[in-house]
Image 1 (cartoon, one colour):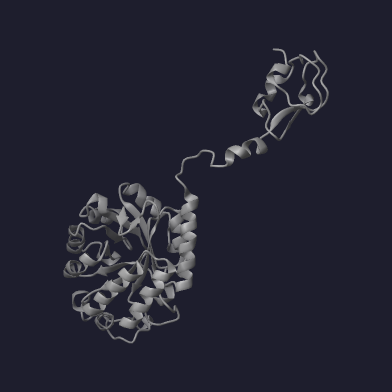
Image 2 (cartoon, helix red, strand yellow; image 1 turned 90 degrees about the vertical axis):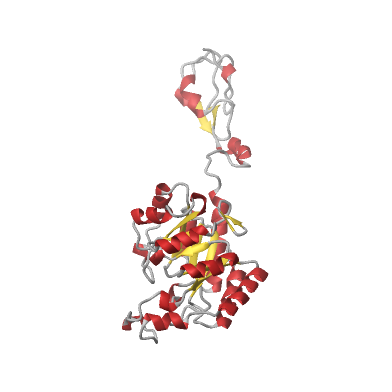
Length: 339
């Protein structure tokens, strides 16, 4: 799958998930974009919603969330950005060479943002919001589908609405922050097996960047990590986000891992042909062997470097008479021994 300028078959598409970590501040949003581009991300991603179309006004925020809002409606309203801010972000992304993405939480938002994005992201919570999934699929863009709290059966229903060539399915666990024991990176393999024609990825909510590096090694081709300038900020997703230096280091590790993964074909690597004679063993005379004397097991020395005879042939030499005198430490040849 190609997303923007990135062929995910050649390199993982790495998304710096800004989400609501801008706190509703356009200045903070621009600073996050700049830092993510500098860290080497392929894309930055926001979340765009109209609060009234996302949550019921009666939904309260639990006291444990430690947020200065009484309801979720108030929280999401505070994180909305105006259209002119987004227009400036589009321009900034283009200038910095990083893709702009957002997760639209409303079908109407898809229409407005699709012309400015190389893909559409569907949040885990909207995997069953079939109207939104279909709207995203109708754009003809790749659809990045997060799968937190979902079963394989639910995922199959959702991806059925997405053209096969545009399916990117991201393993995700909807816990914030995500405990290590619940990450279940082997689910990447399960998704690849269940949906062999889809591009498989991983959206992360752990603390630290180890999980996204491991996901890349496991074959994830789209990788999303929450991103912040300061993970000590509250409230929001800062605690489970990567700071710029962390993300840059993780991306460097992922790019190195990609070089290490290779094409999966087992064969001698370039340069190994020159090593074979040095690291493999040959068959030598341990001591002088007189002409006509049958070769015994104790007469053979199997050491490096390689010789005409390989160790697998040594047993077949036992009991065969020497055609001539064979000096100690000399490499044995097939023509040295009678049948």
